[in-house]
Image 1: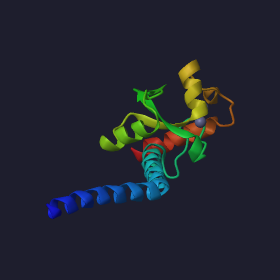
Image 2 (image 1 turned 120 degrees about the horizontal axis):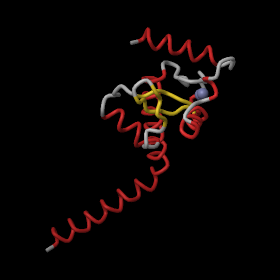
Image 3 (image 1 turned 180 degrees about the vertical axis):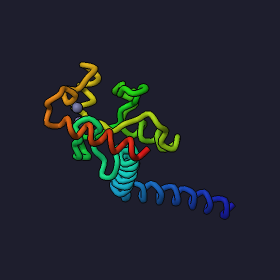
Length: 141
Ligand SMILES: [Zn+2]
Ligand SMILES: [Zn+2]
């Protein structure tokens, strides 16, 4: 049956076409999902860390250095147990629930391993930033 044959060939052709298209657009697709991930990350950082986002502890504004830390009452308990995209996806899905703060990796590691960051010690030049950002947080609520 010629019609059947043609449609089977057509199907095969279509499959090849899609495969080719994906191959050609692979880098473009990867680039697009990279940008989407970046936007998701930025939205979460701005939500929890202000615009532009900054570390809750030391006040650094280098966006590449920032991440999200979980709160436990008044304390930052440190790691959320989720990394990167999974965390940002979860926060977006739950419409950015309370209980998170933006920290830089240095401050997060200090809190995770030493349960406190040295920025908290009095006399640290960054200390005023902490108070300042807390004050702004209070006003934002
Ligand atoms: Zn910091
Ligand atoms: Zn710190």
